Image (cartoon, rainbow, N blue to C red; front, side, top):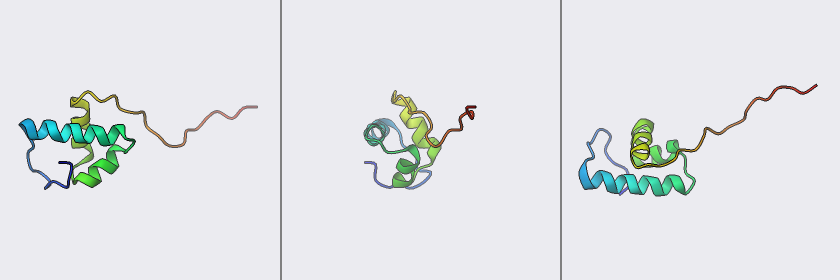
Length: 71
């Protein structure tokens, strides 16, 4: 179900529930929201909202962090 969807197509009802479950599985498998969005052809915001609606605990942001220089 998580195949590329046409952008702007409204996803509702059982189809939305199925898509949310598929996205959750991908996210729990370690994929980022951005990667999932690219794979499905949906926006970052759409994927984020669907994951949030389905009760997924989102990971914190990654990347390098700046720490205070110790003296």
